[in-house]
Image (cartoon, rainbow, N blue to C red):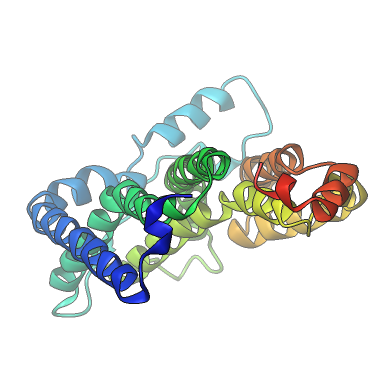
Length: 276
């Protein structure tokens, strides 16, 4: 182990303090820069799912020309009018988006700083494994956010906004409601995409093994179908499968990353194999 493992408690606190200062400084700079670019990003990125030329809608229209499974509500023209009903909402959303954008941009740097902080206390073989885990987790988080933005949120928005209980009711979507659903679904998908990493870590701890995924696969399919139906409450199978398939792929990927039951038992008996 590194000599830094022999540092005192107060030395570790000092290192942690400077790490937090660096992270906050980078996040603050990115937030200030983001405040300048947020109006452009809001119009071109955040509001893009409200328009009919969004890339997912165009892709589905092309699919609809060759398939009968695409629901009718996806083939019609689509445009969402956003209204603001609170005086300060636009200003506070500008600030909120600046903070979230800065967090998104600095997330890899935050992971790097955490890695620098824990790295001196690790063995060489542990460094390789945990370094790969940090990188994998970061990539999966961004992939999940992209799936949330490019698939889950647009499908949810399009279905719910076009859903009609009565012809006498006109839908008007408030800015606050739109942004709450936009941020929640995107970051929720980012967290869900950490499932393979969580499974791999639980496998390292000897809590989870591959037999769990084989035994409960049918149960998982049912649960994931229910979760997908809740995320996109559409009655058509096309929309349901669009959301279900990425989550199910995560389940299978998690099964590939965990150890077989025999390997987990060996790790529990041999402490040295845990860090390999």
